[in-house]
Length: 292
Ligand code: NAD
Image (cartoon, rainbow, N blue to C red):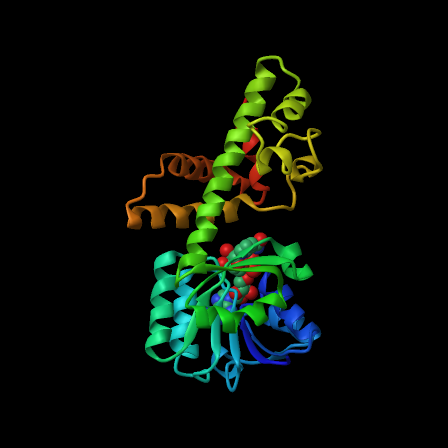
């Protein structure tokens, strides 16, 4: 069904997502602070506006894809809550801290809006191809309202739980990914150091209990395993700077919840160092370069 949808934040991810909504026939009302992003959205079939508030006029849904929690809070509190029609479903797809996601959702609920946090798994290619996975936090009603909109931008839409549960799922998943990637890199380099051919190690461990996505499908060593960013000088893929962003969010949430995360903390500090050494643009599997 054709819907009137405001889309706020048309960057690397949001640009492709908004284009996919326009492509299936939705009336997409787009806003971004960048003129360049607005121009691209226009070419992709979106209508563009000079503020989030104007974009949200008369819509049935608001979707946002913004850099961080402070911006998400500001956009929703100043321009969406109390401005968009109260029946509109509010959908924030940004990756932000759990506490802000809960707070903004609560603010929205106080004013009678249904809202979900719906962060994504998948990068720019998945955003453009409409194959993102959405992990959604919010009430049953909010999830049901958001689902058809999210379906038009992704391949899977999963209800994680109440408000904040989408962000929780995302950062816990990415913390696990960081730990498993570092573990994979460490084991492969140690095997090599001990004189075992890395290809042999891959062949054995990928069929043994060392089996994991980082080893089997995203092997961090060039020339070993399946084709991965390692085989392209660590270009493309999932940038170290973005992994670090997610690990920082994970550490903040762990502290707030008083969860013990010794390996998550170690992974965060290794990625802090690797990022600080100027490697933020490399795929996160390049962490293997820090091993001798
Ligand atoms: P980006 O920086 O390319 O895009 C963000 C956009 O938001 C920019 O175009 C910017 O101009 C706009 N913006 C900032 N403040 C604004 C405001 N007040 N009003 C309107 N527009 C505003 O970032 P991105 O890579 O598209 O990432 C967006 C979100 O998606 C982030 O939360 C990120 O963590 C998450 N994410 C990114 C990836 C990825 O691979 N890039 C993957 C998964 C999740």
